[in-house]
Amino acid sequence: MTSDNAAPVASPRWRNWGGNQHSVAADVLMPGSADEVAALVKEAAAAGRRVKAVGSGHSFTSIAVADDQRMLLHRLAGLVAVDGDLVTVQAGMPLHRLNAVLAEHGLAMPNLGDIDRQTVAGAISTGTHGSGQAYSTLASGVEAVTLVTGSGEVLHVDSSSELFPAARLGLGALGVLVEVTLRCVPAFVLLADERPMPLREVLAGLDEQIATNDHLEFYWYPYTDRAQLKRNNKVPASDRPLSPFRSWLDEEFLSNTVFQGACKLGQKLPAIVPTVSAVAARALTARTYTDRSDRVFCTSRRVHFVEMEYEIPRECLSEALSALPRIIEKLPFKVQFPVEVRFTGPDDIWLSHGYGRDSAYIAVHQFSGSPYEPYFQAFETVCEPLGGRPHWGKLHYRNADSLRRAYPRFDDFVAVRDRLDPNRVFANPYLDRVLGA
Ligand SMILES: Cc1cc2nc3c(=O)[nH]c(=O)nc-3n(C[C@H](O)[C@H](O)[C@H](O)COP(=O)(O)OP(=O)(O)OC[C@H]3O[C@@H](n4cnc5c(N)ncnc54)[C@H](O)[C@@H]3O)c2cc1C
Image 1 (cartoon, rainbow, N blue to C red):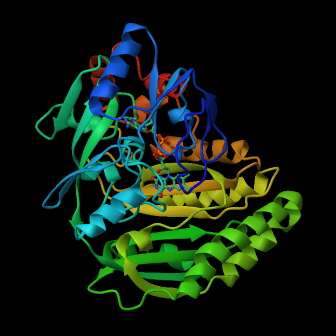
Image 2 (cartoon, rainbow, N blue to C red):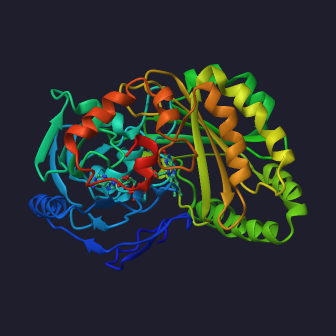
Image 3 (cartoon, rainbow, N blue to C red):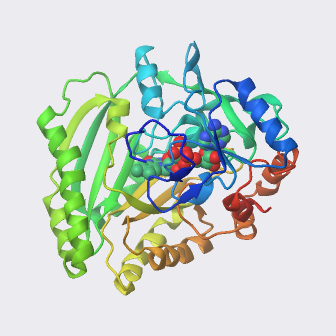
């Protein structure tokens, strides 16, 4: 699996983008219509078998691991309808294709995460998000979904249905999504402003920065007191795109090729990692440019890693962040990736990380193949007591009992699951762990 969405293959063998999850499916199903999905689910239910819909495999958790039949949705990836700013697509459409289709219609997604390789269904189902006080998860822009339930029934769910707060972000536990209607916005241009700064300066002005920028995030470089602040703001026109050379230098060469080399070197010679981190933090230069919104939000990630990301109540950010240097200093290995911090506003989706509160997200990463568990586990012990909610698609160690305490509407979600998938056709070991069997 590459970050470039290689065409899905019918091979029973599968691994995720991070390379940390593997499965061998008994069968690979590739339906070409909602009716075919329904027929396959009915067959599976009658035979007491399981079906797992899989997107682009960009989750780090085992949420997309099929332990029986794997269903690929790449034949259900087209545009269905554009009605003003409401756009309906088939659920297997990758986000990069969605962005291109929206641009053709003078539209855009209001916000996006760091990459565009995920499918629409996969992205909304795990709570994929970007940054920005006026925004929440991508699922919060979902106006309706059509899904095939565990009995093979095709169900349309919109805001008039009591299933709506569950179905928009369903972890793949409620059914196979076949169509998704998204509320989009007129196409827009972003001015990106990225600059290295001392971490304490970033933190000192944070509340004001969050309030006065459309999309704000920062990276902290472990073993240093340096950060990189990224601000993206809507502007009237695109007059300053990056030159093709600068774009290649920053995105391809420095962020991917050089970074990959540094990570490989750091794996062999861990003692140099703090120096490399300090050099990287100092080598960052400020840059500003404008471009189409999705081209600013999303970059290519060719250096493979594993990740944990915790949502915490915004007011707990400094407590969680200040614990990280102490955790990192005690680890028996070095941390090679910067820590990413983002901010979103509240939504009302039952299993959304941002349900009912202003959020800060802290993401910790480690180069694929390097040890990470003590790092991630230690960070979880900081975030869990703060009321933290782990990203459903990123590594964590929580189970249903502890997640129930973090989500006020957890049991309501489970009741919807009992109704739509009573025989657990869509279950897998991950869902058994986080939702209960
Ligand atoms: C390099 C990288 C960068 C990332 N950046 C971000 C980021 O900026 N912000 C963020 O929040 N996350 C980010 N993620 C996480 C990623 O967005 C999520 O894990 C997302 O779920 C991946 O989508 P996918 O299509 O690969 O789905 P998969 O990982 O394949 O599946 C995820 C879930 O969706 C379900 N699913 C898939 N298709 C269907 C369907 N048709 N019907 C029902 N359920 C379905 C699966 O069963 C599974 O439960 C990143 C991941 C990577 C690898």
